[in-house]
Length: 242
Image 1 (spheres, rainbow, N blue to C red):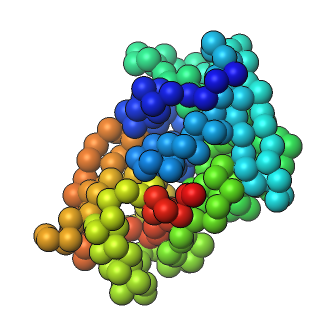
Image 2 (image 1 turned 30 degrees about the horizontal axis):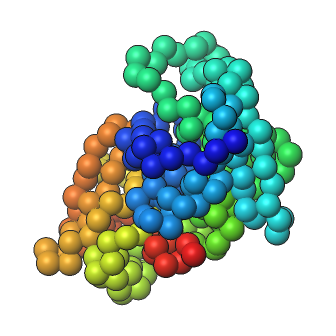
């Protein structure tokens, strides 16, 4: 089997989320946006024709591989709550689907690798719902930076200064792999309980651009709005992924 190439990695920057796995889709997208993240993707995703081998570097302290066949990828079908297939008009990304199938296998074998709160959610697929920091650490073998993901607080207000310092550092070093997420809000705005890929930070006008991979929408938030509307931020700088 060969590592996926850079053209294949570029497809991960344009992929669309269909299942309830924004944590996984945004994490893979974020890794594809840094040089060392791309190296990890190449090391962990091997391909032979339409079959794949997906490596996780930290499952209970050791690496573990999952072989994914073309049939398993084709059998992964988006369904409604009654398990009726939903027709997807756009081409699906086989690399993403291979990772999703691998996560199904991983969670069948190790159910506790999904957080307890997310195990309570009703899902059609085991890989739906989880924390991005859990996926990132299992996939890369490296514990990500994390602000507020496991807190009961629904905004970053209590971590305002820490968040601003991190955003400033991201703006100074644009090679990174960060995911941000919302909690539950009573007012309109960003989607509740949803993950977004953090694309870039502008320190001049103090704004953050995030990407919603479900709707393929880019959103720009001033620092203060980011702190009010975002619950957590987690991920890596490029140098963290060596």
